[in-house]
Length: 233
Image (cartoon, rainbow, N blue to C red):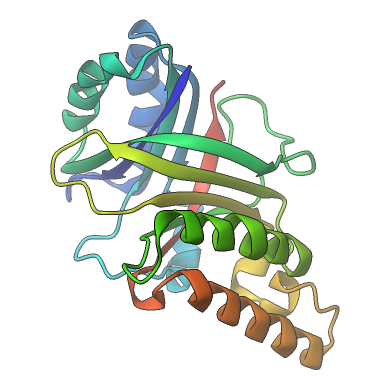
């Protein structure tokens, strides 16, 4: 089985909620008919609207979400590309290797197809030219990931490392990172950094995180989007 991730942009006339409903309904049904399994939808729907101020983006048009699924063989991706192209203004597809660093065991109270409580921050990251791929992975996986789990109130952490792009003109992202947080923490650094009301601890953890990010990323290229998660199975 191989994992495919598609970053998606909606048409201007379509609301984020309507776009989500299309992905969860007819699109997911058609994907299953094409052999897709373990479908997950991340959407900038009505639940994510209040968190728009937490979005970090340098894109002309912010993304509307991401759809991921698994196929027995990536060779069949062309039909999925076309299915999603018919529903979007733009898409960027990637073949990835998934590492489920932290499985969601605390917030997955929703039934399949319903919204997962909390908010998923989707990070879209590039590898800086100053780092070789092996060094980049070593820093990200070996040092940054453990730190993130130590000092942030994360309940989900999935690393998707891009093996190759599947669609033309896909942005040069090398990592698609799914991190789940309690929704209230997304706009409250005291909760985000597990500081327990201690402002000094919050500042220290924030400083450690910024220093770690700078070690393996160029911050001005990082994308971070608060989204709702729907696991379809």
